[in-house]
Amino acid sequence: MQIHVRTDHTIHGTEELTNDVAATVTSVLGRFEQHLTRIEAHLSDENGQKAGGDDIKCVLEVRPAGRQPMAVTHHAGSVSQAVRGASDKMRNALATTYDKITSHR
Image (cartoon, rainbow, N blue to C red):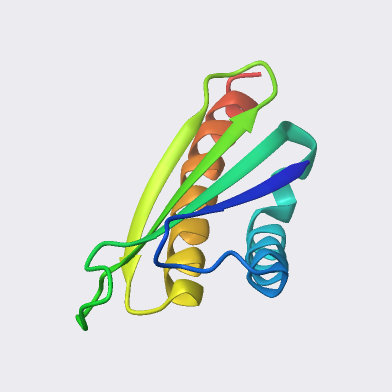
């Protein structure tokens, strides 16, 4: 499973940030690792340099093997909260999808 982190011009895409995002995503979505070929995390600050509330956006896109890509979005006050929120949403979406497949067999 490949994890790619993309950032806009207001969030600096450091190696530390990439490692933190990968660790969070892997810990939350690890149960589905055998089903996923690629995960992309798109991070952006919607207010730019202005101070604001929940202005950090994380769009998490996963590519399940043999299935259509899935994406979720989460807004939060920090990058780590946005990544965790999007990961939790994706875990729920994947659980729903794969639990339906398993129950139909």
